[in-house]
Length: 264
Image 1: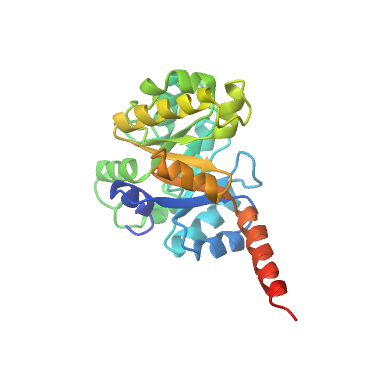
Image 2: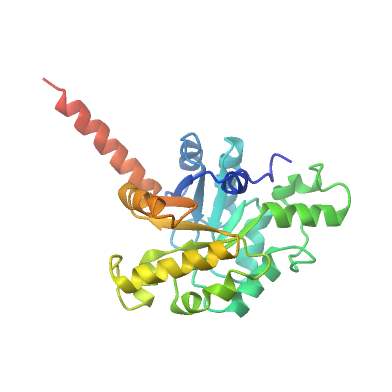
C-alpha cells in the first residue's frame, strides 16, 4: 500500500503540524530535491504553474520515492482536471475558485468512488496499474481505500465559498479547506488587508466552521513569519509557505551573505 498511503493525512490526524510549499519550477528534479528536505508535502500547481498531467506525474513519482505526500492544485473543478490527477497518483487535490455547494458536490462526485461519488474506474499508476495488492481483491475495498486516502480540499477564496462555508465543509467526501488569503481578500473588496477586522472575522469564521465539522485547514502564508503567526493563532493544521522558488532564492541569498560576511 506504500504508493497510495497518505502520510500527510496520518500526520494531521495525529495532531502534528505539517509544512509544505507550492511546486512551481516545473520539473521532476526540483520536485525530488524538495522531497529531500524536511517538508511534509508540496503542492504541484497546475492553476498558475507550468505543470500538466505528464509533468505532474513525474513530480508525484519523485515525492513518493522520497516518502513525501504530493498534492496537486488542479486547474478547475471539471471532471477531467480532477480525474486525471488522481489517476496519476496525487495524494490530494486543492480545488481553486469554488463558488457553490453544488460545485462542491460535483467535486466529490468526480473525485470519490462509489458510494460517496462516481469517480471513473481506471487502473493507472496511482494503483500500480492495477497490480498493487490493495486493488487485486474486492473492488469495493479498493474504492473505500481510495476514498479514505485521497484528499479533496476546496480552496476558500471566493465570497460565495465564504458565505456558505458552514455547509460546504460538511459535504461528505470533503476532507478539509485550503485558505487562499490573497484571492479571498480581493473577493471581499479589501485586497491584501490581512489585518483588517473584516478579514480577521472571515478567517475566524472559516476556522470555526471547519473545526466544528471535525476537518482540517491548510492555509497559504507568504513567508515564515506569517506562517508562525497563523500557527500560533490556531488558524491552521498545516502551513503552506511560499513557492519553491522563494526557498531557492532566499536560501541562496542567505548562504551567499553568510559567506561574504566572513570573507577577508
